[in-house]
Amino acid sequence: MNTFFRYLAVLILLSACSANANKQQEAFIPVAEVRDQVLERLIQQEPKERLASLDDEFVMNFITEEEKHVFANNSWVFTVDKPAIVSIMRFKGQKTVPFWLEESGFTNTGKTVSNDSYDYEVWQKQVPAGKVNLGINGFDLQRVVYFVTIGPVAKGSELNITDVYPNQWPVINMEKGAYTYNDWPSLTLQELPDELEGHTLFTTIRGRAREASMVNSFRPTMHPSSTTPDEVVLSWEGDPTTTQAVQWRTNTAVTDGYVKYWKHGASENNAQEAAGTPLRLKDVYISNDMEVNHWGVNLTGLTPGTKYDYKVVSKQQGTSSEMYTFTTAPDKKDTPFKFIYIGDTHNADIVKPTLEQAFKACPDAAFLTHTGDHVNTGLFRNEWDRQLYLGKEVFANMSYMPVLGNHDSQDGLPPELYTQLFRLPENSGCGLTPERNYSFTYGDARFIVIDVTGGSAEKVKCWLDGEMNKATEKWKIVMMHFPPYHSDRYSPQLRAWWGPLFDKYGIDLVLSGHIHQYFRSYPIFGNEVMNTTGKGTVYVASMVVKGNESERVPSSNYNVTYSFKGGQYQIIEINGNNLDFLSKSNDGAVIDKFQLVKP
Image (tube, rainbow, N blue to C red):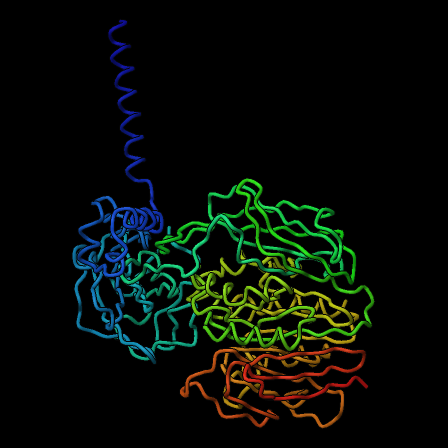
């Protein structure tokens, strides 16, 4: 009897172990997780010169069979309830066919799907009812990623598709006029085989190219971190009269960080201290500085209208930044002030002389606003390193209030670095992602920052309605990346959506970027040029990086002036009922000058 029960216990134990083993085998491993472990191993084992010359053959020989399995199976996963035809539309311009495509039974049909910009091969496979696994777009960084359709083998039958991974993008009908990339919805299908009409289309984003990219993907930063605090940036996340946010960077050896601050003219011996909070930032493609600590703290209880000296220190390392200054906003609304406005810097070398000239021309500016495209590729931390280095003398001495540009969040992926690097007001509400839309008051002006690069315009409208209904400031200024009125031919949707709102709430000035040229509109109300003083909104776009000739857009009937010079900055002064606007280039030339007057 005892022997029997011992035997039974062993069987139960073996059965449980087998079940656990099966569960472990079936455990889903995300592609990004395996990609990161491969990239870290590459950096550890291969010389930097080799990292710069990787190709698909090398990667395939380097990865393990287990890693290869994940890359071949875990990019798209779904279940069909009956036999189905799975079609993969692969960009013809991609040099290397994904390794798993033929291995898993897909064949090139010789047919083509096309949109206005690209042609795609149609690869197909008939699958039985059950789970379907598809692999990566490739080890290259080909932004024109494949997309998928699924249809029943038996025409006219209903096919149910469930358990879709990833599932955050819309599933739509495959037909002419359908879009495939959620980050480029205006790019629609023009030609497709008749048999694909009516199939289920999984929309995607071009950002999926980054899920497994390794070839031509490693990049060093020109400005690696150290134990000395750097990349010091000021901003506001609270009331500018009594608070000041400070953020900075160190390497990961640093375990503490403090801001020491004291009133200008007093002794550093009287300094107060505020401890920073670290955030570990990891970019597996930066071969010489993969992980850094990004620190931040919000100083509170400051005296309005007061200049402070400050520095950032690590007691553990005995290191310190240079000494910088900041000035809190005055608490009297009618106090005159100036601010600097720039756009489209793209971490280019011209940023440094342009910001230096702007700071020299207006050293007492209350803050600097940037209307987006701070860097060329917002997901690359090394580009932010370059941008923050080029502007370090300015960013550490006046608050930097940014606007999100399309290059700051690319290819449908969220702008994680943008929101991680800057401490900004979290006052948008209406279900919006914090810090992408925000507002702040300085003096007698209300500043509204709008994210027009993605997300829900309805939610932004909800928030803007609330903001404007409670705004009591004399001046109302909006900052947004895309300009509604730079050309007669472009931006009709922006004009149709935002124009009536800006008219309704009496927005005085809209500052933008994006187009890599300068323009200023006449006052516009109801989509018409106004001749009445004090009525209508003036729209301006500017840039630091000059556009290519192919980007030149002819001036609009809405515009007073237009320039294609580059290296521009603007100084805006608000004094009572007057707003004075000056645009200059970094060689000292005056590009534009005007005044708005409240009646």
